[in-house]
Amino acid sequence: PELQYPDRLNCVVELLDRMAVGAQAQRPAIHSHQGVWTYAQLLAKVNQIAQVLRDDMQLVPGNRVLLRGANNRMMAACWLAVLKAGLIAVPTMPLLRAKELTVILDKAQVSAALCAEDLRVEMDAARSGAPQLAQVVYFNGDAPTALEQLMAAKPTEFKACDTAADDIALIAFTSGTTGKPKGTMHTHRDVLAICDCFPRSILRSHADDIFIGTPPLAFTFGLGGLLLFPLRAGAATVLLEKMTPEALLKNIQDFQATICFTAPTFYRQMAPLAAKYDLLSLKKTVSAGEALPRATRELWRQATGLAMIDGIGSTELLHIFISAAGDDIRPGATGKPIPGYQACILDDQGQPVPAGVVGRLAVKGPTGCRYLNDPRQADYVHEGWNLTGDAYEMDADGYFWYRARTDDMIISAGYNIAGPEVEDALLQHPDVAECGVVGLPDEERGQIVTAYVVLKPGVEGDAATIKQLQEFVKQSIAPYKYPRAINFCSALPRTETGKLQRFKLRQAA
Ligand code: 3UK
Image (cartoon, rainbow, N blue to C red; front, side):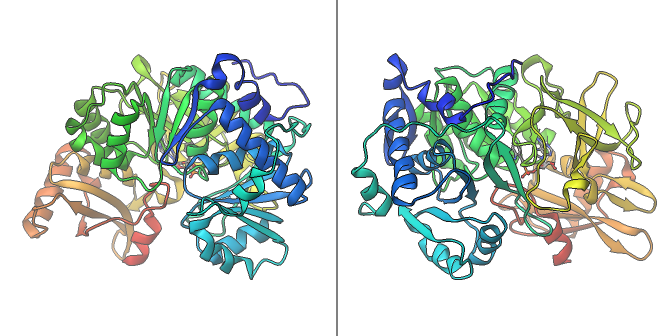
């Protein structure tokens, strides 16, 4: 891909100002439950917010601005305005509590915040522990709140801050399933680079597309898929708050969405309900955040006729770097490095391993990990290669097959067992709704393969079911991998981004 950008670059000019001209200005940019904004309307709002940030809030280029709110058009406009004014966006997951927010406020040295009215309580609580946070301005209240009032007095034009392509635009925090959250810094150039990689080579999106999905804009999977990619293509996006599988299906139907982004579990839950909706508009569906089980890919294909586009991305690399679409898909494999990126598999000493051997995934490309003041930088980046923490295998044709997170590999009686492979097998069983497989300490075997299973409604979780599931797994994968222990539960612990929290399963035991 062409990834040459000028040295002076404000990505919002490229994503929005240059798009909101001619006929494109009157085309829809963002649909949300508050209504629709055309490209021209979105640009006007972004310009007004940018002036509030500069003139009323007295922020100067390089200042960090916390962003909080559900996915909707004002949240998107705030994100764009922060970057357009030369400030650095620090988006946060809506469900974060005061204590977690205080860590981020301190770590990123945040000086101001734009926060949705419905998250005020937690924001105020976090503020008391963060003296450097001088101002918080609220938006999206029932009556026009502070931000809308300040905006109303502003002209709808704003000259973008003349930032360098290498200036930091965004500090994205990792979900932090283990340890303290890490801030990852990304530049204006990085923002455009992800828009010119995956969407062009794999997704092949265009101006007539209508994007939809669930990941929060504070998660870079959602930021790219539901805001940056649509704008770069001149397409429309549908931003939705608090989604259920039924509601997402209904919105796909109502908005005639063509491209959907969500996590594997969400597709699994949508598949059995799909027949109740008209989903003929849907052309591409992208799954990321965790491994896509084969059974989920198959259920989705049966329900919709669509070949799921799996893709692995990370907050550190900003977006997806290995994927495949159409005829290039090999069910079970994530795909190949997307054009612009390279990937290889290394052993524990950092040496490449031959095809067919499991090792550590290493990735290099136009984007890469830049932790904010964090000694863990040296763990993630080795000689320009990003070590994502995933155990992968490459086959002779250059396809990459996910095995597990490196620290989730189960070692039982000397065997290396990848939990997701056992999950894959269990998910093929008609009685299994969801499952998670971890290794629990065991005197005899070191660890034993333990499955936590959510059964479909009406199925009894008794000794006979356990036996049946164990036999089922032994029939489909190497018998030594079968779960020696099976526990039934009503739900699995997941992050806001749809990831199974294996450490919680291990802790619970
Ligand atoms: C795992 C996957 C197997 C993998 C993300 C798309 O998930 C994203 O970012 P995070 O920082 O987590 C990164 C880690 O999640 N993972 C993600 N996708 C897959 N494992 N198959 C997949 N398709 O362990 C990775 O290292 O939360 C995903 C775009 C942007 C993102 N930030």
